[in-house]
Amino acid sequence: MASYAAFTPIVAAVGHNPAWPGLSQPGNLARNRPTTASSTETANFPPASATDGDPATRWSSAYSDPQWLQVDLGSSQSVGRVVLRWEAAYGKAFRIQLSDDATVWRTLYSTTGGSGGVQDLTGLSGSGRYIRLYATQRGTSYGYSLYEFEAYGGQPGGAHTLTAAGEALDDPASSPASGTPDGSAYQQWRIG
Image (cartoon, rainbow, N blue to C red; front, side, top):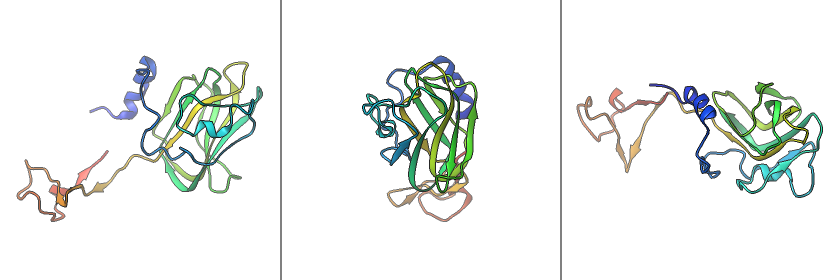
């Protein structure tokens, strides 16, 4: 079975249905969080528009390099995926960075071949209270412009106990007794 990470390059090449995905994806750590930027093209394109979940609004920077957009996640969060929904003015070279204090930054992702459109960056692994897009080369003569900057936690892994209405979920093909939470191997599911 192929992993989601192996599937994303295919999706990037083919493209998405115009309605995919809705901007109301659950788990977006950046949505409606305090957002600041190095610059704003005009008052009509403020930083908060990149994290408001509204596909009709956007943040747009000054027409120079470098520029950044920073989000305060409120507390230290694990980040495993970032989605950038670019307007036509995109970043060709940029880094996604995390910080505990908004001063010292750790690079989570870096590219010099950004393509614009919807960039779904998966397989990331890091944590911090602050996350930012630090852009160093524009893909057009305009500034940088994002409809949405989304951040999601890492994929769950390890052993989990799944329950439904107080009953344990087990594998009926292999479990000697159904519906009784007993902590046996039959009631441990691995997500991976």
